[in-house]
Image (cartoon, rainbow, N blue to C red; front, top):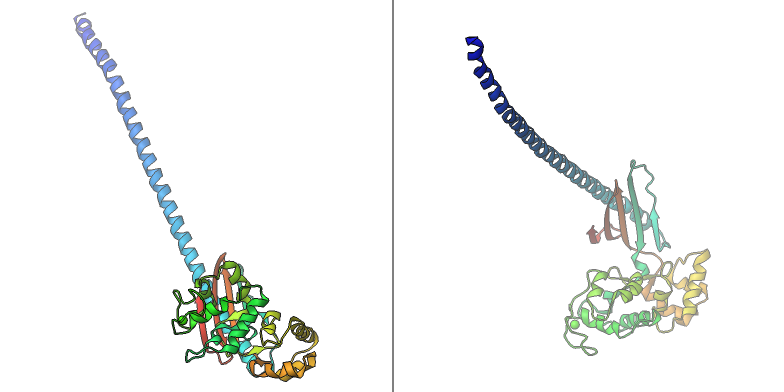
Length: 312
Ligand SMILES: [Ca+2]
């Protein structure tokens, strides 16, 4: 009995201890669970961050790689275009205003290359209004004025452009020398810097303007506004006669413009400013690799000399 008696308190004590320790174990287990959950949450966050970073890195790397490929393919496009230049170098005349050069080769899935060739001799060289010595070429300036008149643009803008290019600071009209470059244009885009040439005007004139070339207009490729600008006597009706003639044949000599029905008195003065064969071309090669596009634009002559090069 003593043993029992003496065990009771022990048993009670054990029981009491058990009752006291049970919540402590639950607390510890609860804390451990919370810590574990926290750790899992943190780890999950870290893993998600890592995976996301890896995804971004891989995606950037992939974009970079596609961009590099696209850039190289666009450069190859420029090289390829020299075949056309070589081909037309020995031609008696050229009569394509613009064309898309066939690639003739499968480049692979999700890879695209487009080569566009545009005749710069079909356009008016805006730099030609000023001679190299800084004097004004009145005949060329008068042509530019006529081009603007035909396009319903204030012809005085031709004077502002002349002041922008010529080396002196003497304004032809009010404020026309303000902030002038006083040097030749490197690109048609520079015209946007000139006061009075907004986007609307730029878009209207830019298809007919270049800053490159030998100032010879190809009568096989020039469009009506440029043909009209050739001299004071040229009318829209004359220009349309030239366009009509080109429907069925090409001019093989500048004097052959008379075959289109242009009288000698008008045709003859055109001779010194016109050609039937172009030497300057704008080449745009656009390559797309897996949705990433690179464009290279150049202006070259038929001897492959490069006058302009822009990558984007
Ligand atoms: Ca000036």
